Image (cartoon, rainbow, N blue to C red; front, side, top):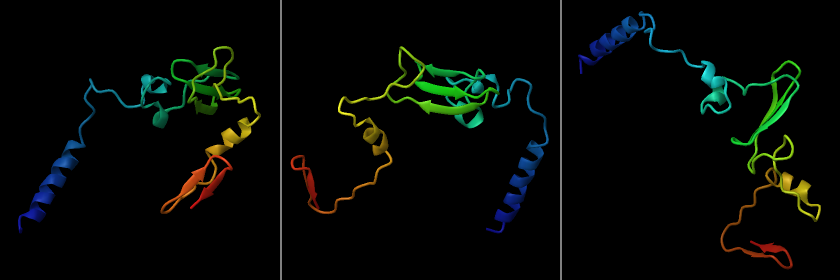
Length: 130
């Protein structure tokens, strides 16, 4: 046990000395040009998707909608769960004929219901009994 503090000093010394050398010439820095692509798996933390000023694009292959401002910065980037529309630069969306689309859109932010014990949910007359 008496040698443990000395071992820590040796490890710390090796780490400090190893950090004093230059980067090897065959090792690239992170966040290079591939990171600026929407298709790059690690693009989210390092860079926003590439943006053409004053444009809207929906990538059909990746299902990502990107809205760009006049300076070429991303104003909004959305993953389209149902994919992109083939007729316009927008995400596909469910549009029921009974006019309940706004309620479907709000459902994701709705309250969470917690049922404890035995519960019954009746579709008709639309009641829930905890």
